[in-house]
Image (cartoon, rainbow, N blue to C red; front, side, top):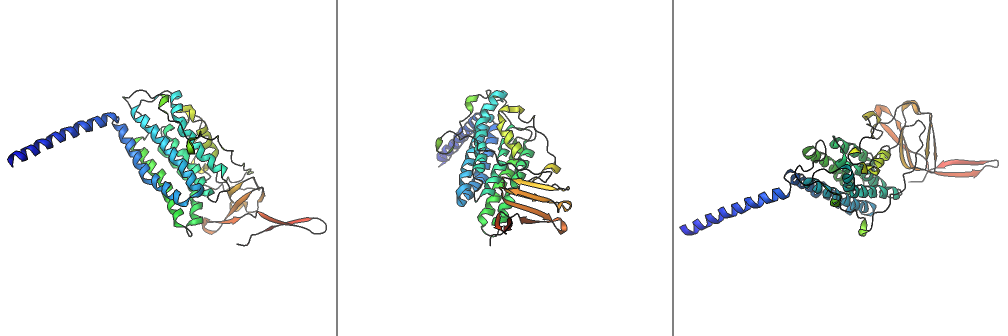
Length: 355
C-alpha cells in the first residue's frame, strides 16, 4: 500500500508539471493579454448576442433575416480582434484592408433596412440599422466606449416604439429589446476593461498584414450586394428634426472607414443639446414640410402650435403636441383622403380608417 501511495504521488507531480508546461504554451500562443480580450469577447457573443439571435429567430421574418446578418458582423469583428491580439498595429493602408470585411457587412445590415421600409418590423430593423455602426469602435480613439453609447442611444429611439407597440401584446418583443440593448451595454463594459482608449494591439507579434482579413460573405456564400438606395429625404423648414437625424453621418463614417486611423478627423462633435433623438427643438416654427417619408415624429413646441404642416407622398407621420407637465401627446397625420365634386370644384377632406 505504501508503494502504491508513493506511485500515485509521483504521478500527481508529473501531471502538475505537464499542466504547467501546457499552460505556458497556451499563454504564449494566445499573446498573453490579447488572448484575454478575445476570450472576453467570446463571453459577449455567448451571452447577450446569442440571446438576441435566439429571440430574433423566434420572432422570425425580417427580424430573423437581419439577425443572421448581424451574426456575420460579430464574426467579422471577432476575426479582427484575433488579428489584433497576435499582431502589431499596421499602416493605415493595411488597416483599411483589415477593416473592409467589417465595413461591408455593416453596410449590408443598413441596406436591408432601407430595402424593407414597408416591413411590419420596420422599427426593429431601424433600431439595429441605426446602432450597428457601434461595432466600428475598433477604429475609434481615444474614446470608443462613449461612441458605442451614442449608437445605443440612437437605437433607443426605435426600441421605444417597439415597446409601445408590443408591451401589451407580445412579451417576446419586449425581451428582444432588452437583449439587443444589453449587447451595447456589455460592449461598453468590455471596452472599458480591455480597450479604454482604443483597440489594443500586440506589442510583440509580427506587424499585421492585409492577408489576415477574411472576405465578407452574404447569405449563401455569394459576394456582398451593393449598398441599398439612400433613405427618402425629409424637408423640414426650420422644423424639429425627425428620428433619423444621425443616420447620414453614421453612414458616411462607414463609407469612409478605409481612412484607417484618420477616420475620425473629419467628424464634428455633437453636443447633448443637438441630439435630436433626445431633445425636441423648442423654438418657433411657422411651417413644416414632409415629403416622401415613411415614418416620422414631429415635436411641436408651445410657441409653434399654430404652424402649418404640409405633407406629400408620406405615411406613418405623427405630430406630438406638448401638454401639462411637459408630456407630449402623439397624434397621427391623416394619410387617406376623400375627394368629391360640389358642382363647382373638387373638395378634398381627410378620412380616418375605422379601427
